Length: 229
Image 1 (tube, rainbow, N blue to C red):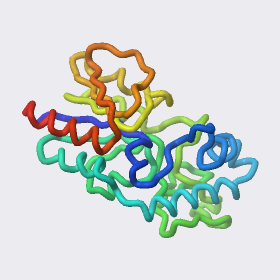
Image 2: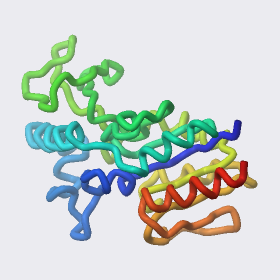
Image 3: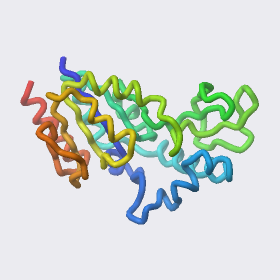
């Protein structure tokens, strides 16, 4: 069974009502990155950061997967589908995808600020000041912030290297190190980029653009892949 590795970004969740990473004004849901998504922001005003991620968690809990997510699940009937997602919303799992690697963390989890290996599932969308880990330190979102290491990058690189087909959907290939993952696919592996806008990326003969939104583009790509079986 051929292995399809999918690299998904915010665009695939946009149809589910989850705002994309940054708007045209350079802000992320009304906030600059420096305000809410860096270790410095946590040090300066952890209450603001908690509130920001509480709102994101609440929105994600009520959001439903869209057709794009569903198509990736359907492909599992014919391929070994492995998803590497930059998204933290959990919609791939909610749709029923079996194999999801979270590159940038998960909204549904929190971790200790004293020992990052202490990770917990949230029981409610709201994480409050005074919610502590077993060591007595404040819990923080289990999210990789700007300026932090990406622990799952190594496993993601290893996974891309095993791909027979690589699909890039809903990401501009501008945020590193995630954008570098395409470079680890074998040289003879086709790379399908599903996005309504052509990403600014060094294109070569391996790359095939499907200039449509996530659901429409993945529907077209699904038919193409099934014809190649």
